[in-house]
Length: 98
Image (tube, rainbow, N blue to C red):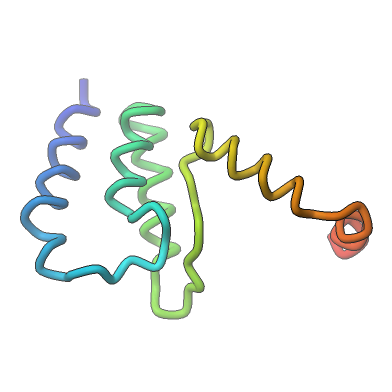
């Protein structure tokens, strides 16, 4: 039940506060869209943890980029697309570095 007040908070943020800042998000989807998806997909506790982690990664030194909520169809499609774009030679190099 706690997830609904959190969702309302994020929706209120998107409607009233976010427009004052303009389009400044470095990530896709935006942090508020990420938060909504995380709360709707994973519930209040895990969704809040994921959202707080995402907001913590949003700082002036962050490169940003694409960052979908884990466990969503978008995240699975993104992972699959990225795994196809990595050649076997790149994959072995990545494994050696790690």
